[in-house]
Image (cartoon, rainbow, N blue to C red; front, top):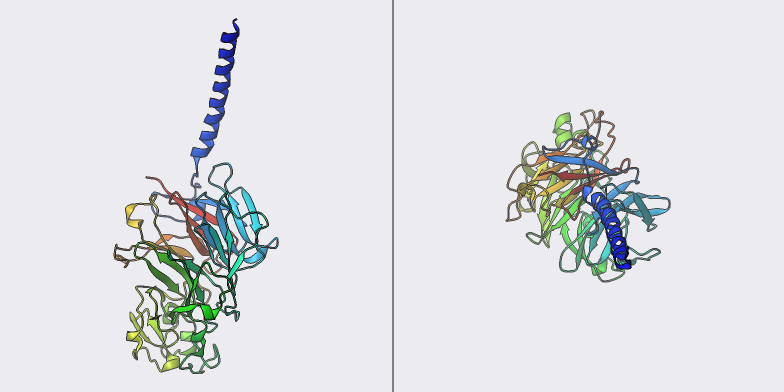
Length: 427
């Protein structure tokens, strides 16, 4: 055999070997996520599939998926001394098989934008610069961009969202049920004006590229919001949308006005489109889900019919039954799901704790269709259900965070047992 022919055969053998290896790699990479046979134990509309992609991660609050597919989760409690977890799918099967923790602070908020990862504690907001690998470098120390926010151990979480003009919008929840003189005490009157609104009960706007900002550097963007856990900047119409947790104890404090069931259904959990200067009415007003009207709270002279000046407050654009706890809001911009989902809103409901002796409720993810004008154009529907398991009063899993993957899939986190699902659609 000539040396040339021998070299030719050698080269062909090498190429065939490389081709076989490449074929195996491609098989792994394109195999992608496959829904679990039972959709990860949850119920979904026809055509959708669910897959458990991570479990026992920790008390996962809000989540965000980077452009490279890495998922970052903010933890309510430290796990192995860390408050942020980065999950990575290394073998391409759609499940996360590498976990890295960093950050020594607990909290809720999580986002990535313009080369930075943002995360919040209950009093501060931080950001990490992503490196050339599009990840947070080992040992990286964050910049503190906001500090000194209220934490009075009630509605202390600081979820946030970012717009496209260098601003960040942060929830500062009210450490109160209804701004009574004595909080949650039957017969205690409401304070007017409510002093809490100076520093809480609303959304504050800050800059993303300025360090150590305090209340003095921030702007009270919207007020009269008891506790906003879900907020998202809708890029289709360039506006801020939020979901509010309503007040408690209407039946317990005022049984002469509310039946047991009416107390469970009221007040509504609400979704607002807010702008600079919006006043959504808390603590003076609430939306009565039974009467379909915004009325005065009893602590301020309300009798379920008096509206007072509640008609002049910002009106919600969607209402839900009471005590379902909307914990995250996500406007869907992907192309994987059917067209009706484009620019519509997913909302994760954490579920109730205070409807007894009525059954607890919630523990699901709903979808609200939206038109091109940035307003709802249809009724909301339950999209993903069954997280609570067999006993609704002892929920196994509680939806808390939502994130969209680069391929248009939807991720849902649970802060009870630390499970994360990925929802896909097969055309």
